[in-house]
Structure formats: C-alpha cells, structure tokens
Image 1 (cartoon, rainbow, N blue to C red):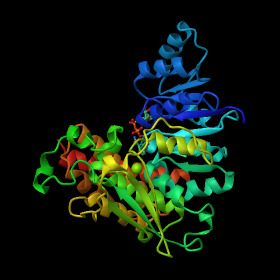
Image 2: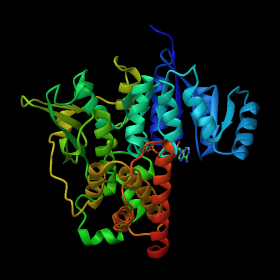
Image 3: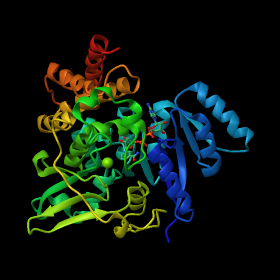
Image 4: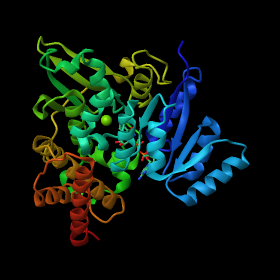
Length: 396
Ligand code: NAD
Ligand code: MG
C-alpha cells in the first residue's frame, strides 16, 4: 500500500474535526495528522496534540501560542505552534500535506481553504460557507490548480457518490435530471408557528438526528443550512438552482438522491454519523472502516418525505433567491446569517428575527460582481455592517 497520507485538520477542536481525528486514529497505517488548528478550547487542542502528535498546531494569538508551546514542551511534545491566518494558510499549503480537512466554521475558513485549493491539495470540504461566499473564484482556483475537492457535507457526499464519475462533463450530458437534496426539517419542523417567537438557543441546538457545532445547528433549525447547501451543490455539481429540489426527510437516513432522465433515482443511505462521509472522502476512491454501525433497516422500519414549508422556513426562500441572483448575493446572505445566528445565540434577537435581518440586509444592497477575493471580503464586510446596524436598531 502507498505511504501514510498526511492530513491538516483545520478546526480540529470542532465537531467535524473530532470525527476526522477519530477516523484517522482508526487507520494509523494510512493516515497521520500533519497539523491541528483550534480557535478556542486550548486545553482540548493540547490534549489532541499529545494524542495525534502533529508537526504543527495553529492557534489565534501570540498569547495562546506561548501557553500551548510551553505546555507541549513540558509534556515532551515536539509539535511546533504557529499563529493566526498566516499559520492556517501555511499548514494548508505545506508541500508535505496530502489532504486538508476544511472544517473551520464560517467565513473565517475561506482564506485557509483557498490556500489548500491553490496548492492543489486534496480538499475535504466541510466549510460550506467558504464555497458559498466565493463560488466562482473558488471553482476557478480548483480548475487552475488541479485540486481535488471532495464534499464532506453528508448531502453533497451522498450526491457525489450517486453521480457518474464523469459528471463534470455537465449534468445534462450525463443524463442527470435533478438533484434531490434531503433535509431533516430540524427541531422545529412541527412546532406551532406562533411558538417560534419564544424558542431558545438550547432548543434550536437540540437537533433530532445530528450532533453538530452551534452555528450549523441553528442553521439546521432555520433551514438556512439547506439554503447554503443548495448554493454549495450548484457550485460542486455545476447545477442551476432549479435543478435542485429540497425534500424534507425527518429520519436522516437517505442523505440525498440523484434523479436520472431514464427514471432511475440513486440514493445514498446510512446512519446519521459524519464519520461516513469523512471516511469516504479520505479514502476515495477506496473504502475504509469509519466506525459507524451498519444500517438496521428493520429498526428504522419507515422513511417519510414531505415538501418544505416556506412559511415556516423563510431562510430557504432567501437562499434560493440569492442562488438565483448570483454574484455578491450569496456572500451577503452568508455574512448576514452569521451575524444573525450569533445574535440569536447571544439572545439579542428572537428566532423569527433571523430571516428578517437577512432579508432587510439583502434588500439594502445591489448585487455586484465578485471578481477578486478582495471584492468577496468587501461584500462580506458590507453585509456585516448592515446587519450590525439592524441589530443596533432592533436587537436587545
Ligand atoms: P464547530 O463549531 O464544532 O467547530 C468549528 C471549528 O472551527 C473549531 O475547531 C473552532 O475552533 C474553529 N474556528 C471557529 N472560529 C474560527 C476562526 N475565526 N478562525 C479559525 N478557526 C475557527 O463546527 P462544526 O459543526 O464542526 O462545523 C464546521 C464546518 O463544517 C461548518 O462550516 C459546518 O457548516 C460544516 N459541517 C458540519 C457538519 C456537522 O455535522 N458538524 C456537517 C456538515 C457540514
Ligand atoms: Mg449537510
């Protein structure tokens, strides 16, 4: 077998990061951690470094770096600590790295993820916000460098598995009619609409099927996550928004489907555990054990499907509109959503104010072309400013 693959895990202390390290640890003959990065929870990052013995760790500040470096030395570790975005980009593009798990949450992941893309790495993409913000530039960078992007989002990983190998020729060329993107409907699928005014961050983060970071958990409750995924799927599979249909499937056993012109519909099924798409992308085109239990269809017994309720989930409509508008609209949608979700988690706004804030921000700005990374970050900053103003006016 080929030599051990060295993997940089961006966002190692997060939900996806920890699942990735679990898969790495199951296959010491195949995988080793090259770099681990964390933004908070420095004690956990230290513990992970002592177990996985990466060459580098990356932390946000000089202060964190000094403390972590000292603790590592005391424990006899030779891991070297780097700092900030520069450190993140360095460990993403380092020549020794075979694959980069992009699992930082939000816009903060864009530059390091792009650094991995530009260096032509195998990029395991969990950080959907990076692609949503910069889609055209991101995919152009993939083509220019020859990077291989493998989706970690369970839906996109499922779609990838159900697509023909040569899907890059174009969906109509390979006989694909549409993509069916499944959604669980989250914790508020059946909550009476008037009660949504009172729901708490704790309720929003209590997802029925998946255990995830707080930001994506709120996005799943509002279905902005599905909206971001719709935009993500357009870029990854060169699809138009109208070729993607969202299907609510509360059991989260079918992770998405591809519908072909001959009437065939291919689906990927599995227990809701992110180690399956992570192991799939890490080993692709081979397969390795992920630690996930086999699917027990008799225990599941039934699979249900329903159309998404746009009144209940206005974020889905906003995301579809942004996908159709293109250019700066998805970056602005994403930035406004990041501010809105953080404000909701801090109890500064109520849950139904999330889509109101985003819609008001988007309505205030014309859509402009994004042809450089600077223009992407300018659109992001503009939306954050407008969202902050909205918050000062309407928030607690
Ligand atoms: P999380 O909050 O559990 O972890 C986020 C990680 O990013 C942590 O390691 C944190 O330290 C790091 N981080 C946060 N802010 C940072 C910053 N400003 N700079 C550098 N690092 C920073 O989130 P998660 O649930 O693991 O999600 C990570 C990404 O994967 C998100 O983009 C999410 O949409 C995507 N994703 C997650 C899941 C899931 O099941 N958790 C599924 C699909 C996609
Ligand atoms: Mg997903």
